[in-house]
Image (tube, helix red, strand yellow):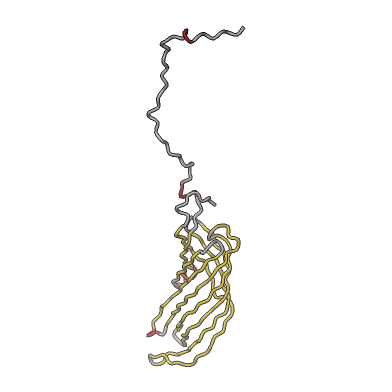
Length: 220
């Protein structure tokens, strides 16, 4: 038979009091990042600007700089300036060239921002003066063409770029010769050229990261 519950009057008036443990010394603990990964490294940087220098021109003592702006993952625009101004007219030597051009690029299925193949169109112009002890040439001209290339990152902010540009160039060429300490004008002719206009192996510094305040952007 089931036991009969005791009446309430039979419960002792002074039941033992059980004290529950208190936890007054609990401190908030911040979550720990996984080993080897920090908030800064946990996202893909999306740099808006890139500053470049063509190493082939640098080796030829032809200082140059290019600034490119990434509009979105598919399009970017760039402006490039190249200048060398060496020579000594008294010794009939001159190697002077200044060129500026602008380029628009379409990135073809990029693996990530600033990473992959691209095709572009460019246009620009400049002036020149070349002389090597004898007949000299000086003038100005313009060019337009198409470019193709590839960029690949080697670190968070550094990339390399290889590209080739072909197109049309027109120059108004003036020829002269040195005579008795002066340069004597000979003639002027137009130069029409179609073929390679650009050859680049550039080092690229990418900066102005749009994702720097968003550590939850997934990494590559």
